[in-house]
Length: 73
Image 1 (tube, rainbow, N blue to C red):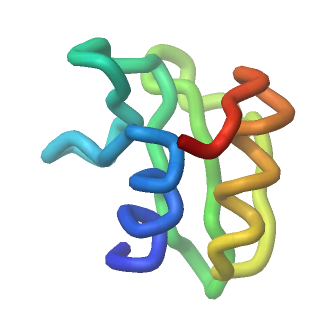
Image 2: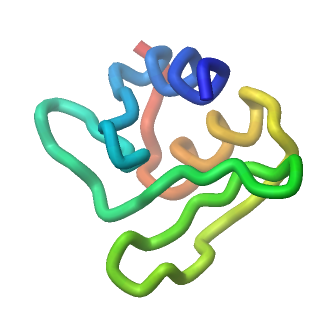
């Protein structure tokens, strides 16, 4: 998970204790899970898979840039 935290830090975000993405003191409804050598972005409410990819920082960067249109700080 250290790689996910480092990738999120580029956008001013971090992971909450439950694996949810947090930015600007707001907690999103998206949880990051690493399962079977894949990063999964899941809805916290329904558990629905929103995106997945290999366990590399580029996967996290692509997700936040495409889902929220975040830019690196």
